[in-house]
Length: 165
Image (tube, rainbow, N blue to C red; front, side, top):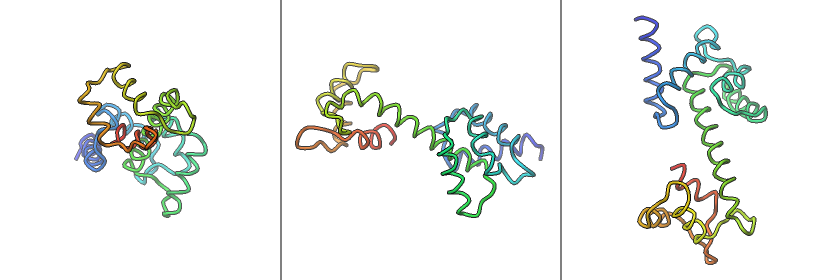
């Protein structure tokens, strides 16, 4: 089997295991090339190169996050990361960044600065800003949310149930 066919097979195998919702095919191919460059003797990427490799994947990873992932994998007696490990971490970081961005946007609606927003404010924002939603679409979203007696919605719950589902 040629090297290119072997690489394609490995990429497709990883996509099959993790899905392909987080990255485009081109991104995954580029990530694979970066991964192969940093791999040592077909073992994978050493834990010591985790941060550098992920930054080359265009992931914003802090030193604290790098240390957390290194600790997590070293506790499993892994000193090298597979391509699947790297893509899974990159997808996790991408979701964290998405949550941070949406949390920042929604904080403008958090009048009490307590991590909640009024359902009426969220409904207005969904209806009138960005890609405007229909009343039916908004109703479908609200059916999945818990609204407090005060009429507020927990921002993190909203993000987990709706944005990251």
